[in-house]
Length: 429
Image (cartoon, rainbow, N blue to C red; front, side, top):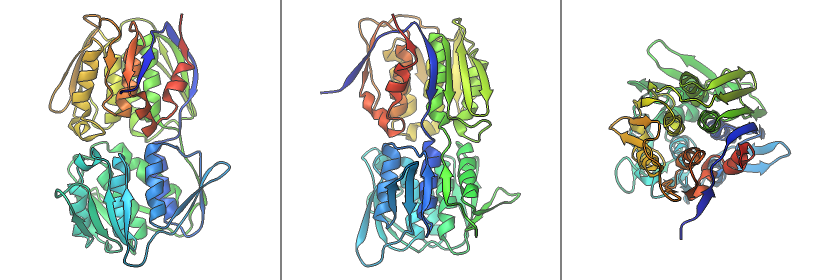
């Protein structure tokens, strides 16, 4: 039996929400902290399904993640001796799988990396090819280029590594993080455009905060080498990906919300999506530690944008576009098909289930607003076991006559308290 959340309509939104800490920065900091010989405290890390999956794997590799007064204390170093093969289960986390593949190749031990059935369908071939080019022993035990893989640790050597990044920036970030564990470091040379390129900037920000040496060359090569003096604590910034649905909610339902815990300006990929929301007609006020969004209660403007750099924001932007007068296009996001669900296809199905007009294409989605026909009864909105789809279903429910959201608990992947936090700013009755 499926679990559903009944979601009645609202009259508007009003209030303030503190978003959780960044999943991207938490995962990167976990890797780097576990590579230290001295304890590192992560202050206000994100505690979610994805970060827990990575933490469990790091502990299996010899690290320790211990709750502290302000967050987690992480102890390294990593590496397992002996002949026993260490099992690493990344769950449904693509970030953990990519980061762990490169990390396991760099530290001693024998590892078998796997994950959920959906994760075993997500691409790894570009990263596997890059690792092998630098001497790493990586064997696929199923389909070539997919999980599960068997890795002989400590085989990754200092090198200049070319990597295709047209399907995921995580391939680049994985190598940059693993460079810290390689004697002499690594130079990573992305080939072609990097999708979601701001996430590489996030990786470099965290590496720099941990005291590691970074060099950018004119041909796009990024060199990383272990630094000398390193930080003993790291404070995780707020998550822009989690903030975007609240900004969209202001445009859909009307009213105003202040989102705190953010750092502005930011390299975070989804910080760029706020500019699109503003272009559509939602009032945005930016401050160094918060951002406010104000909906004026009028029809919004349609947009046609490349969302290559902020694909995770597309579902929320599409929900907002249902209130725009005309056709909105979000393009250059073919890589959304390789996420927790086929997000282009799933998003089109979800929008149509809510009574909206949407069509997914090869590399984007077209949404036509405002709503042409009302959904009847209490529509059941599918979420495809995808946290971004569940958040989008909530946005589509704000002005409906009542909906049922399937499997709302899947938001635990990145934002366990999303529905509780959303409830605090809804004006009903």
